[in-house]
Every structure is written in C-alpha cells, then in structure tokens.
Image (cartoon, rainbow over all chains, first blue to last red; front, top):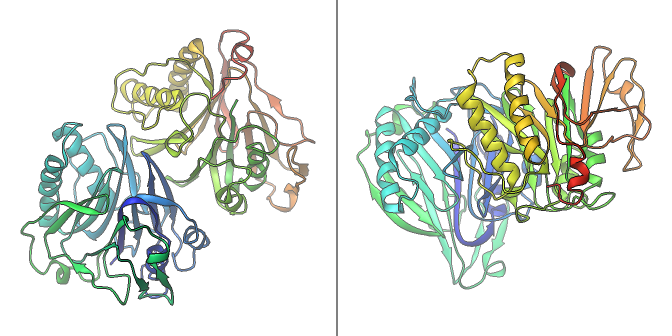
Amino acid sequence: MCELLGMSANTPTDLCFSFTGLTRRGGDTGPHKDGWGVAFYEGKGVRTFHDPEPSATSPIAEFVSQLPIKSKTAICHIRQANVGTINLSNTHPFTRELWGRYWVFAHNGQIPHFVRRVGMYEAVGDTDSEEIFCDLMNQLRQNLPRDAMPEQLARTLVSLAEDYAQQGVFNCLLSNGDWLFTFCTTKMASITRRAPFGPAQLADADVTVDFAAETTPNDVVSVIATEPLTADEDWDVYEQGEWKLWQLGEVIVAGKVEVPGNSHDRTPESMS
Amino acid sequence: MCELLGMSANTPTDLCFSFTGLTRRGGDTGPHKDGWGVAFYEGKGVRTFHDPEPSATSPIAEFVSQLPIKSKTAICHIRQANVGTINLSNTHPFTRELWGRYWVFAHNGQIPHFVRRVGMYEAVGDTDSEEIFCDLMNQLRQNLPRDAMPEQLARTLVSLAEDYAQQGVFNCLLSNGDWLFTFCTTKMASITRRAPFGPAQLADADVTVDFAAETTPNDVVSVIATEPLTADEDWDVYEQGEWKLWQLGEVIVAGKVEVPGNSHDRTPESMS
C-alpha cells in the first residue's frame, strides 16, 4: 500500500520531522519505493516536489527533508505502484485549479476499473487515483457553489467519498489550502500537538525532536498519516468510514459513514 | 523586466548550464530578484520548482542547478515584480491541465489593467501574467479541437498573442510538453546547438561547458532566452512580433506579426 501524510496547523510549520519519518518507508523501512511527492501551501500558492525515485534514496527528498519550508497545510504521498507505470505523471499529490485556488489530492487505495464521469478535469497519467481526483473535482465544480461553507463542502465531499468507498479502497487527503479533508476506509491516524509540547521519537529513523524548543504556546499542529510516525506518542486511529475536516490544526467537522467491511483485507496487496 | 528561458531538445537534456547563467541574473548580475521558477517536462509529467526568493541566493535554485534532470522541454522564469506582490502564488511558470496534458506558461512583459474573458480557468495569484495565461487557456479550450495539429494550434496562439501584444508587452513561452511556443514583442533570442558541438562560456558566471563531451552527434538542443546566456556564441535575435513553434529542438512553424512599435521603450521599467 501507499502511505499518506498530511499536516494542518494554525501557524506556518515545517514538515521536516514527519517527512523524514515517512520517506524512510519509501524503500528503507517500508516498500513504498515507486515515487513520492509533497505539496506545501504558502498562502494561496503551493510548492510541490515530485520524484519517481524511491524517497529513501532520492536526493530531492533528502534536500526537502532539510528545507525549513513553513506551511499551515501540507500533503505528502509515497507510492507503491499497482495501477499505472512508475513515472512522474503518476506521482501523487495531484493538483488542479478550481475557483481560483489550487486543490491538492493524494490517495491511498485502489478502485479497479474506475470510470470518471464526464467533466473538464482530465487525468494526465494513467492511475485510478488521478481519475478519481478528476472525477471529484468535476463533481465539486458542477454541484457546489464557489462560496460553499465548510459544512456544505464536507457534505458533498463525504457523499462522493462514500460513493468511491463502495467501489474500492479510498483513503484520501484533499486540500485547497484553506482546510484539509481526510477520509479513511482502511488505515489512517492523527495526532494533535499543542502546549505543553514535549519530545518525540520517529518510528522509522533514529531521530528525536523537542517540539517545545520549536514552538510557541499557542501553536496547534496536527499530523495525519496512514500509520503513526512516532514511537512514543498516542495517535488517534481513524475508524473505517471515519472522516475529518481539519482547519488550522483543529477538526472543524467530522463524522462516519458506512463503508464495505474488511475492505483492507479485500485488497491487501493492491493499494495504489 | 523579467527574463525567460526555454529549452527544446530531441533528446532528454539537462538545463544546468543555462539555468546557472539565468539564475545569476536574479539578484547578482541582474535585478530580477523577486522570485523564480522552472518546469521540466518528463514524458507527460512535469516537475516544477518555485521560490519567491532571489534565484542568485536561493538554496533551492542552487540545488536545482546541480540536478541532472533531463527533459526535452523546459521553461524557466526569473521575476522582477511590478504587478502583484512577491509571493509564491505570483511566481512563474504557471501550470494548468487541458485535454489531459499539463500546459506551462511564463510571461515577460506587462498588460496594464488586463481583463480576462469568462472561462473555467482562473488566476490564483494577482499578476496580469497569470490572468493572461488563464484567458489564453480559456480561449484554446473554447476555440480549438483537442487534436489540433501544430499549424492550427500556432494560428490560434498567434492570433491570441497578437491581441495581447496590442494591449501591452507580451513575450511568452508556452508548452504542453509536446512543443514550445515562443512569441516576442520586445526581447528574445535563441540558439540551436548540434554537431559539431563545441565549448561555451556563460555571460553571467565564470562557467564553461564543453558540449561535445555531453552530447551525441544526433543531439539537437535549442535554448530560447530573453537575452543571450553565453558570451562566445552567435544567438539569433527575434524581431518584434516574431514567433516560433519549437519541437524536438527544431522550429516547425514560424512567422511574424505586426506589433505596436517601441513597445519595449514604452514600458522600460515595468516588465513583470
């Protein structure tokens, strides 16, 4: 399976610590060696890095892991390919512009033979994940007003996600820079760090950070990942069908929908 | 004024040499210190790097200048801001998806008070350049068939460019990864390197390269830039209103249209 990493914070925060942990799983502590990508929002702008190389040995990943890019919202993905060849165009996260904002999407799962409904957004690569993203964007453009409030947005996103989850495995991270939508059908966990901050130890690398030294008392930083990234913190594990809409580090809307049971066991080796 | 750099080659080629020269002009040998960006096509995928920092001192630019990313088509831009604040969302090149391809655009010039016609593509930042790009993309989507041949594509692009040039200064680079469209209203030059290859010396840095050692006899690599980047080669200088459509390092269609005279003198200090 692939792995996802998202961040939502109330102050621009760098992703170096979590990114270092996740990228270890791209060919070192994990098998997700078929490319990686990350998107950092800075205001309405988004800075992306993509590489079809294994993240554990990618010079670009090594460089990015040391870049103090500070963002309130970030989305990262490491890939273990099943659908679609290993190349740049198939590397998550994917980006499209809608209503004057960049929307960024990363997917963990697989929807075999997914067929996108007609709309203006089209996939460039040949993954089911990008087809799903384009379908989602087409549906949003056709069914939502551009000034939709988070609650209305969440209702539409959840009904779309519920539909996708009926067709396969659909864990996703989606953002327009203003909020971060997370949906889990099989595996996802989150942690919210706030004062008093303490130290943390990565599960995948011999790296420890003392958040107290890098934060202010008002900081709220939440990290969402397929699997917990630290060995010494208590992560909240999403239930199957659980979704959360994050903003500024906090959950502003959340809920749970019915998804086909054991969907994780159903396709254990085919998560894209 | 800003500066543009484009590359069209018949074999995947790295941009390190030219990129090193151009980025010197971003705060060192030139005043274009308000951000920079570059897009490298790899197949249908595109790898972009953006930074609102001066390219001459940007750690990311330094890193990219040493990355052996090999591409047949690349577009780079260094910015001297006039319209739009200095931030990531205003940093060229801009990218949108159309007909399942990523289209990348960089602009040198200014069209004061430009008003985009209605269409699905909208600017994220607040530069005239991104508004022009979105207008251009909207017009292409509305007026061209998705399977348009280069000649038909060129006719449409030139008529749009001619219209923009009537409203201000419009030097641009545009690509969908398959070809590179270049249009000049004030300043642009190109050079095509092919066997027998020789050495070249950057005009902006004490860097020399021996292309013979890095190429094969069949390679054809063309570089298009606002100002020649090397001190010891003969560059072809575009005339005002001249345009060329490049593919695999060669010009496949070219022409010239009437543009308002002295448009360069008209806005000497206001090129975005």
